[in-house]
Image (cartoon, rainbow over all chains, first blue to last red):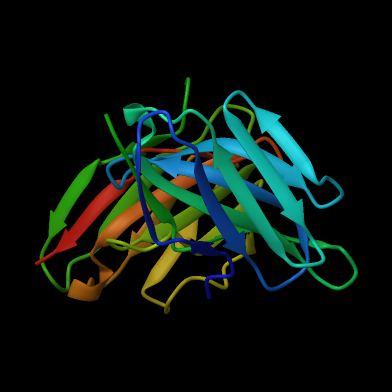
Length: 116
Length: 113
């Protein structure tokens, strides 16, 4: 079953604006990762945030993680037309004892369209 | 190689036929994953290997699906008696070890007619 649920399902913005996507999940996690996908083929890893981290930055990307709310957000600042893609969160879930299941569970994704 | 390689990139087969999809992971990556993605959906987990053994095959939909990784590198996903519902993009990914970022191939688009 899909654990991560992204919100919104689709987001349309103008170039230069910021884009925020949210992800909620249900079980304990070791880490949460965000991926980008163009044209329905290979996914590209963007950023990984561990369960003991609250915020992480990479270039124009900012990810936050709130394990008490079981949610994460991805912020893309100063968006560009080239950022147009689908964005997925994926969780590396763990059991109650903290042992990783060892697999990533993906959400349904957010389709981001950035208009020039 | 530089990245995860999947072959073929596209495969069209007739209902009832057998197909094999191949994945060449990044050299040295011990973990290998197979996912399936239908149009408009997120990738759905099928199976993952840690070395040569299948650490978790709970995502395989039924016994028509089978995957191997005999030498801990290349993996083959095998689908017997294909059905139209098997049509999807099959994605392979590898990672240096468990719990780290996964690198995905471009996928194999399987179409069962």
